[in-house]
Amino acid sequence: MKKWFLLLIFLFGFGKIYANSIFIPMDERQSNHLKAYGIAYWILKADQEVKWLVNYQGGSFLMDYTADLENECRIRGVAYEVISTADVVMLLNFIADPNRNMDAVKLVKSAKIAVYSPVKISTASFEDTDAVLLVLKYAEIPFDVVYDEEIMRGDLLKYDWLHLHHEDFTGQYGKNLWRITPEDMAAQERIAKKLGFKKNSQLKLEVAKAIKAFCAGGGYLFAMCSGAETIDVALAAEGVDIVPSQFDGDGIESEAQSKLDFSKTLAFGDFILELTEQTDERRMKSFSNINSAMGKGWGGGGWGEDDADTYFNLFSFSAKWDIIPALLTQNHEFQIREFMGQTTAFSKKTVKPNVLVMGSSRTSDRYIYGEVGKGQFAFYGGHDPEGRKGFHRTPTDLNIHPHSPGYRLILNNVLFPSARKKKRKT
Picture 1 (cartoon, helix red, strand yellow):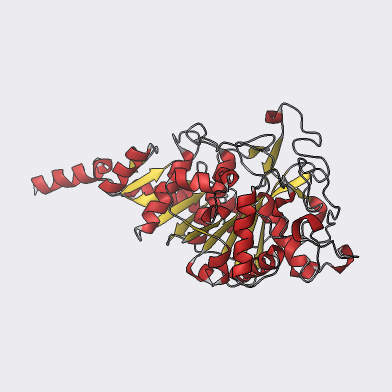
Picture 2: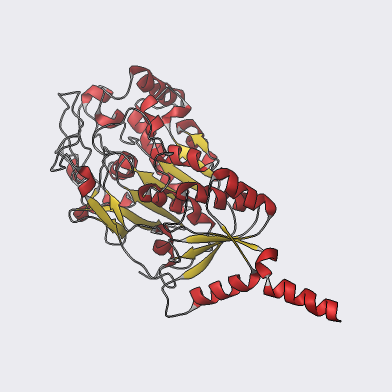
């Protein structure tokens, strides 16, 4: 009897030795915030559960202990703690207190991820700077690259999550012939011809409609930079020629602006197109006034040389009532340094009233969320969260930015479809 008594004292008094949970902090103590998301995804892909502790120490993660998990954290350089069952109970009780703006959300299945990118069909060297491609690779989260042919044959049904980045769904090749190479243009035109379209703009419209249908059917769409703007421009302009002659051989349709149908768009409405012929091929042009930097040029528009002094703010949401935006804004910092893109940020007056703004600066909205049909989308302005002014010809080295709060917002979206969703109240 005495031996059993001593054994019980050992087990319960020194429970951490026999701990059964891994706690991954996501506040300032975390040694690599971005790779921590990769650990969470790795566990989900193994059909194990992750608890996402909303608003607790930067949006931390809690997982059942295994030696393999502990070893994986060490290999990837992710800070973690081994905690006992008793500690887990106390932690979850603390979070469940109705007076605390916290929640523990179960993540139960890894999302199957697709990235829409021309790197699928051509060199498209500039697209290698796609921030989502960079961070998925860095966090070691698996994904497939798809492009127009895959989407037109219905392959999106295989995926839960789709990303769009520096893409032009209007068929104007980004409105900058100095960036896209003749080889890249020819590769896109070959696909349009192969699929029976006379113009690339016609193919891109059908792709945009298929992406919207994917989202409405229950998929999750995450878009950045011009991908977020041009999908709505293309949808609104269905049946209207808004493409200058230099891109498709004929001119812009008369009264094109008045023929737009904003009921077909996802996030934006009442926007004004930029419908002028492009005479200076070296100057980046805007698609519409969705882009808050429209008409100000690349790197202009009041952005000073010291871009480090300009920030946008993430809003605070109720973890227990507005769990969707609360999850999507998890971070260890709530002021995010601004960064540019062809579509840098969204004009406040063009964001639809039913779209939720999650991050905003004084002059523009930077991070928004919406719902369509059974699905959801989030749009994030700018090209590279660790980039600043102008095009960055070389990809950002995320080994230098393992704590990037701007990149964390991308990875929040990657994990989000794994959550057991609750209805958004806001």
